[in-house]
Length: 318
Image (cartoon, rainbow, N blue to C red; front, side, top):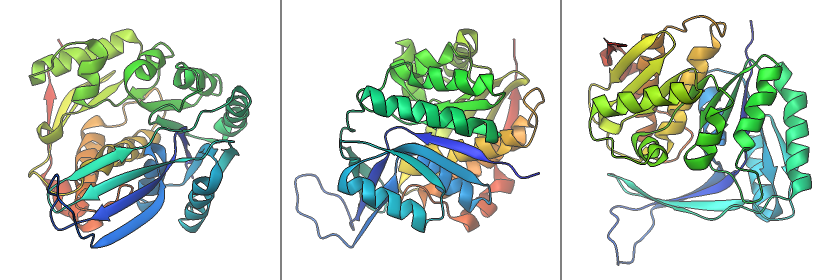
């Protein structure tokens, strides 16, 4: 049966990527390549889902000349999108990428008016019943209530649709109360939310359990080179990549969310999606994003090479 994953990008952007031989702070650089295209975390998720052969639809905002660029690029990429027009312009991001790493500059998003937000909420309410799963990811633009993700999760609940939330700070804290199906912070985001250092796998796992106590049904924490930790309704697992991949990590988290959405979408909400398989896929897919210069794409050969080598282990739930 065909599945549709609805991705919501409240703070979309036009992503500009500069490729340089080596980034040296305080120096001038000769740029070897420039790319500009639609971005934002849920846009990246939708791109990767499409690359994985999964149908995805996008909801969000778009305004000004940069909003026109956003619309055209999504159309050219074959991503079905409904974008609420805004008075203020869509933001831009700039990533400076060299062979070893990336430096990212994020412009502030537009101020969303109460009427624009109401239009988005209405559009979401009409669209969510046709979805099998919803992805809510990224920062909140100014003007949108801090409870935005919680409000959308509750609308999805009423339609019988699961939600994945990839957010941080107060937006994540508020969303937990609405009991999302899955949350995916990284270690730094989780530490900031709880206000303490998470300097061991044991402390990260205990912190992830707190997310479930606060309302989330499942939590997957991305721990950089230490892999993934999952605390779920069906058990606790860790998954680790066989090697450290050098490159541009800016899209790795979004690719992981795409992998989690794809894996969870394959089973009913009350069943175990097969977490070891879902997590192993997530490790391979997110690693395959690091070798690509732009966020929102994966290198499929790298994914296939790494996938059989990912190690997963079940951890004690007590």
